[in-house]
Amino acid sequence: MKVTVNKVDDANIIVSGTLDAAAIDANVEKLAKQAAKEVKVDGFRAGKVPVAVVKQMHGDKLAQDAEGEALRELIDAGIAEAGINAADMIGQPSFKKYEKTDAGIEVEVEVSTRPEFDLEGYMDVVPTFEKPKADEKEVEAKLEEMAKEQAPFTKIKRKRMVKDGDMTLIDFEGFVDGVAFDGGKAENFNLKIGSGQFIPGFEEQIIGMKYDEQKDVVVTFPEEYQSAELAGKEATFKVTLHEIQEQAEAEINDELAQKLLNDEKATLAELKEKVTVQIETAALSKVYNEDLKPKMVEALVNKFDIALPNNIVDQEVDAKINAKAQEMTEEELATYKDNEEKINELRDSVRADAIDSVKATFIVDALAKKEEITVDDQEVSQAIYYEAMMSGQDPQQVIKYYQENNLLPAVKMGMIEDKLFGKMLGLEN
Image (cartoon, one colour):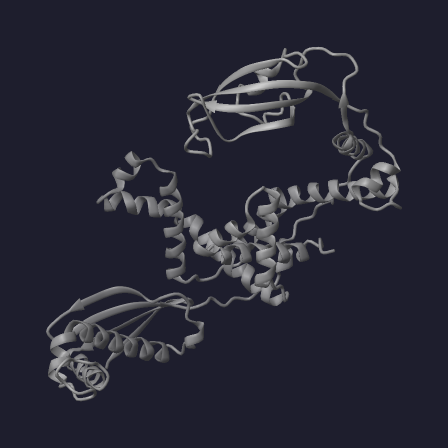
């Protein structure tokens, strides 16, 4: 088999050759003989099925397998001639040509490898910055907010009508078309007016109610309401107001610290210290994500000139095209159907960003190995679990979604990147 290898650049080669028809036929014969010993066919003893019968029954499959075997031999010969280690190949080879002729199949395959490059001077990209410091006003404001959240509500001393901002104690039961619905009833329920906790229009109708007053509150469930049975429906809630409550004055003292820190020996000074750290950490995170991280990625991409595996770049282009398609209307998508020129224009429009994204990924991966930065699967799961809990989602469902949509590698890469940049910036604890 004659094989030609052309080097495109340091990360890509083109392997060319002809899959000889006689060699493919020989592969078909070999595969058919192997199959004859294993397949079961009615009327023949096991291992005694004639090769001709196997070829008649599975001819197309045998031909495909024979062509595949010949193609693997051609690619193996090409990478051997190019001096490439098979372990350095990345992604799947892509076909540039696959034409059947009387002599066989003319093939051109692009093979891509993991890029190698010199990392010298990578610390030059680290920007100078000052860690944010929390001032006294910020700390005091946060303490007041925390104290207010902990301050209890008590029944007001003088009866009056409900005002916006009041905490109320109510009973309610909801009906649609005169029929009570599941989850629409509660007794002695605390509702703060103006909190937006209930369906739009509900809380506003509580304003002006008097003690022990009963009232029909009529609202319409939003079209996007989570329960399909109630979405868009008009409902009547029978509401009884029991009392209005007001919040006690917030006190900032050791007792507050002991309650928040769950430590009977805690002091206000310790709480202030923790609040200070919390404020500074949040501010640093904002600076990192909005300023430092983008600057470092851009600087690294500009600093290193490396050849990239074309198949990985094409995959990233596909991913960006798919992301854009998700945002398009059906009318917009229809304009691309069977319009190769327009599709190519769209691909060209995202290619530069795709190249930068792939380049950054390889650079970060190489630097992480150099700096011995690792993230294991348990860390990834814990991070997703925490984020889900903080956003009020079911952690198990979120992890399942990430698994089913193959998103875990991207999350892991993001965590590795943050660990790496944190080390480079000197932000490690």
